[in-house]
Image 1 (cartoon, one colour):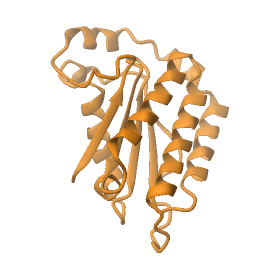
Image 2: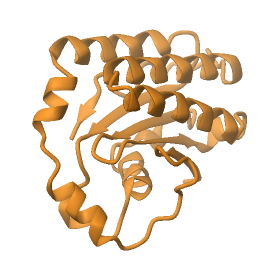
Image 3: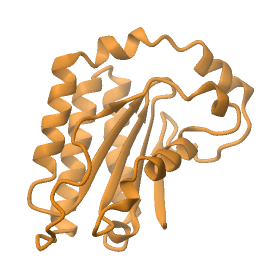
Length: 183
């Protein structure tokens, strides 16, 4: 499985993951009520509808994962980038018929956005394109417009896939659930 991971934080150059007690403490003291407030039932439905619309016209599959904080048993040694890679694998985003899966991972505690795309897509789309999408989502998160940021990101991923990855001869159909996964 060959994937690329692109990430942004408020500092887009923050790409190195190291052992971090500070990261672990930050995850420990994150309050989950924030995500329930930011992503109510209407917001979750809007995200699901955005995924359905964004997957039209191409064979790409988009999976959205929104996580309040990293699991404490991994937060000391692994940041959002490693977590996104793990979820890409464990959720089977890599296992689509045409290697056309894209994971949009958002860590609310760290304000981190990660895009992990499968090898079939990365062969056609430049990493700068994904980075721009991450930056646009991160800007909305920073403005406390969480739902709008996620929907915008989904739309931009959909437009990118439509532009660069239009393959309509697949009979696989919708291989991944359109509903966002909240962890």
